[in-house]
Length: 402
Ligand code: NAP
Ligand code: ZN
Image (cartoon, rainbow, N blue to C red; front, side, top):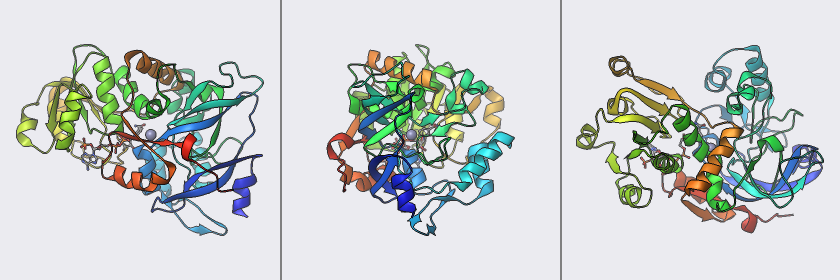
């Protein structure tokens, strides 16, 4: 019954790999995609990056998913109203309550990935921006309300009704499935053009990791030449933060737990210095030196020493998806320092970011992997053992079983 729902809720057959329980183990999965609507773009997916958020969600790191066996198929169910409201909704508005109810009703098999790059195979009759054969990408969202202040301001990522690329409900009630699959259909407004000269595989991580670090650098004024910035955590987001910060003309210090990343950070990524966060002497040496910090750490960690690194009026921007961190207040008061969070940028800024990346030769350092390496890759990502983004070669290695 459920298999029927997934395979036949839309007319077009699709194939991917999905997780069915909190082990996060991925295996082949047949489902369906909607027909190309008049404003839709359909793409053949060629590459897809693996973001740590995929890992968080597949392993239930936020504690919002459980995996009961609903007759016929396994599902992710959101089980804690309070946790969910706290993590995703923040304010209890009517819109958010409705959105929550929608979420709560969702029964999802998760097809992850939101760093999707491919080639347009079909466009709707009213599509204006794309044509068949164009190289395009889809990031973390596939729709939004288009009318709230965030949408009007081109900040769709902060729209309370935005529709994430996977694990959510479309306006028609069907489930969104991510990029670990052969095809994708999205409204043209949520499709990004990949500029010529940017390799498609190395461009894929820009659609989440890239825009997640580019956006706060721009918004918080950390894009000015001559600033001294720290990038904390040298993973998928962190290595791109180093590259964008350097492209903006900053002096960049990497703060890492991994000594073996030092040589590469300095020689290949262009960082100016590298400190180990657990080495007190090294951390002493950078106290009061930073104008801004982009913190990309994916796990619980102390903030005190990061706040100590800031100059007065410095800004610590958290982008790592960590549910809760302890915030020491005195260092903020004494230096009028700012702690902020930031999500991905809107569509306009994402296109700006990727054009900037092409212009300044900013691309992700990647390990391209075949589809059947995916479960090993997820384990390695969990151990921070990747330089610096896994990208799945969907186009050449995803084979349908039927
Ligand atoms: P990643 O590639 O796994 O990199 C995370 C890095 O954090 C690791 O390479 C490691 O760097 C450091 N780290 C990991 N565990 C640590 C620990 N226990 N203590 C200190 N440092 C630790 O992950 P990513 O894809 O860059 O994503 C980073 C975070 O951003 C994730 O939480 C992800 O969900 C989140 N995210 C947020 C947004 C948003 O909209 N704000 C968008 C995308 C991703 P070192 O080895 O250098 O220490
Ligand atoms: Zn992501």
